[in-house]
Image (cartoon, rainbow, N blue to C red; front, side, top):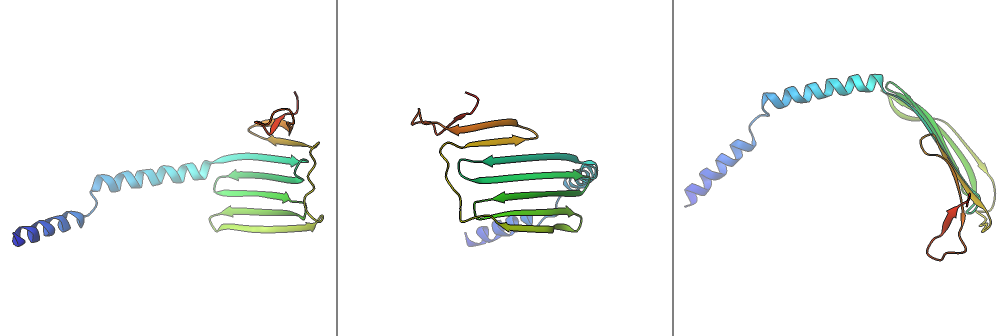
Length: 144
C-alpha cells in the first residue's frame, strides 16, 4: 500500500512540475502586445469637485492621461488645512511634483442650513441639503 501512495505522489509532483504549454505562452504574449498598444494610445481627462458647506469640507480632483503619461492634482480642505497635491505618473512611476498646504482654521464648522454642491465631468452637477422633514432620509436634492 505504501508503495502505491509513493508512486501516486511522484505522479502528482511530475504533473505539477510540468512546464506551461506553448499555447498558453502564445496567448500571454499576444495579450501583452495588445495591452502595450492600448497603453500607448490611451487618452482620458476627468474632473470632480465637491463643495460641502454642510460639513465644511471641499474635495477636488483633475486628471489627464495621454499615452503612458498621467498628470493631475487633487485637493481637500477639512476645516483645519487646505492641501493641494500635483502629481504625474509614467514609465518612471508615480511622483508628487508639487505640494501646497495652508492652515485655514480650527476645524470644520457644521452648518445645518448649508448646501453641498457636487460636479463631475462624467456625472454633471447637483446639490443637496439636509432633509429635516424625513427621519429616514438624511439629504434631499436642493432643487426640490
